[in-house]
Amino acid sequence: MQRFFYLILLICFGSSVQAQFKVKVVITQKPEQHKNEQIYLTGAFNKWLPGDSLFKLKSENANSESFIINNVKAGLLEFKYTRGNWPSLESTKDGRLEAPRKAIITKDTTIYTAIEGWRDDFPSSTASKNVYLLSNDFYIPQLGVSRKIWVYLPKDYSTSNKKYPVLYMHDGQDLFDEATSQGRIGPLEWGVDETIDDADKKCIVIAISHDDDKVKRIQEYFYYDNDESKNVEGKKYIDFIVNTLKPYVDKHYRTKADKDNTYMAGSSMGGLITLYAGLNYPHVFGSLGILSPSIWQDYGNINKEITKKINNKALQKQRYFFYGGGNENRAKPDGSFVRMNDDVLKTVEQLKASKAEIKVLINPEGRHGAWYWRSAFKDFYKWLTIKNKY
Image (tube, rainbow, N blue to C red; front, side):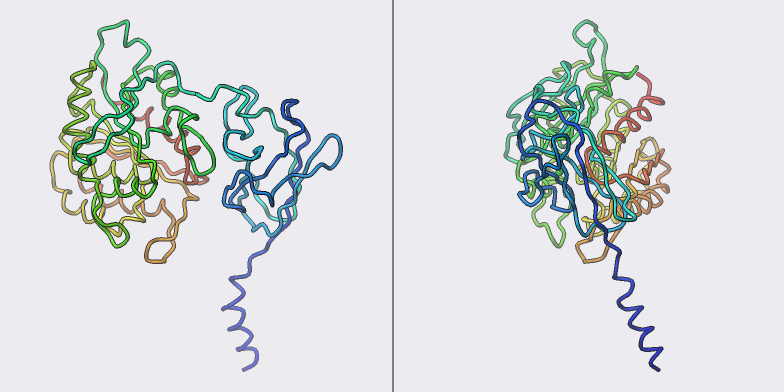
């Protein structure tokens, strides 16, 4: 009986005990600029606060600075260096932001690092010269608000008479420029402009900014009310793109306006609303890029929507690109825990009955954020342009 009691204790409590380690990070080299300023460490361990006073590095000697992170769980550790705020993040030697530094922790560890540059020593804008402001306050009558919209034009647009496909994208702040991006772990942009600059086949990109209030952004990207969000505006937002914005773009730019040359792409909540747009406007959008869609937040509404739309023959002539990351884990609204890529795979299986063309990319190391969507967008754009005729 006593052995049985100890076994029960082990089952109940043993699985909740996870090994924790001490990780020391050391900077062995840094730029001469700002060499006497305080450096901070930021990561999930301090909720990505860029100037946390509890995470100041200390000088070891004339050539190095260090900090010890205690109670690090086994697995992936990500971190960045700042001088106290997001504009002063570390950068490459030519001024571009990189992904967070990574290490797989299995024991007490020392990590040696070198800082090549500081982001605020370089021009704030990283947008290519082919990105323009379509409007600083484009009116959205369906929502009663005005919104900033950018347009990317292929570099030969002004010197040719070509017509181009159009890709509509959400979260426009994050697509072209570190100066406007608002990522959870710093201003990482997707590099959409650079990707298309380097591609053989070009398209126009229309990038719609989201509301600066993140709660309102979520309201705007939900298609149906749910237990957490009421009076959502996703239907009105997509109606705006289809019936107000697209006619404007087709009138003012040289576009190929047909379904086969009209695309949409987005990530997270933007990925979710993109999927809804594809299902409800299959005669408008021929190809959809759905990156890390927030299906977990939608209370099963998207799966009900697929069930309703699955027999629409127009879906058979659509193309869907799904991306998910193996490390995109979230707590669902009902308190359960989900791996987001499992939701993606489940939804893809359901959508297959439509006979639409579907491509699925799962990055086993992928997490939820702009750095991974930057890479996934390159894969999406390559897939998009291989088959579609320009």
